Length: 268
Image (tube, rainbow, N blue to C red; front, side):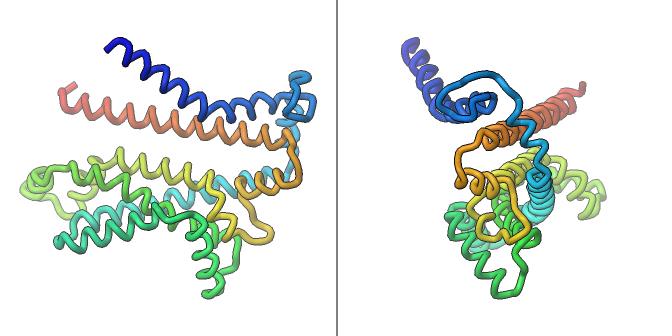
């Protein structure tokens, strides 16, 4: 048992090393004064200064954050409503059909989704830009939110709802004071997953973005095609750190909520 435990730790360390080594390699050379990724000549913050001095790039960062936040909020609202609708459908066959349609969007290749949205927007006359990117991000984020919220709804005991109705609660009060507080961890998880998916999406965004509007993923791809610049490393490092902060924020929010629930359960 002792050997297996040590081997499992070694295996996990190897897996995480393979996953994170390229990221740390990129971050390391973002501080290189040499201007290349072959030899580290000296420490500098010039590449980060270039990022913050590039007005166009800062506008693209702002566009990306606005798209990510708006699409996450809207998709979370729609996803919660969709999860509630799936759970409260009485017919099992209809429920399975809805779940299948939801899962198809998750497993579909991003290239297919992006091309489909491009054709759709072209047919209905939606101009490619902010609106098209926002609608596409909402569309691929909603199924993620549904998947995150559904398990919490399925965990909820029907006796909670019956007790609330017996005490005279209306349908709205049951939803707002019983159901939503119970599934709050799933809602937070869905929101943060939608946010991270929106921030790093490239394939779908590449198809539906237009002239005069871009997001970070598309811009980094364009910069990389022109040649390797350590400005890309600096920008990628900042994005990675921002993503880490989101994950840490979600962890503390979930921990705080779970501690609150335990306190209520124990009467503290």
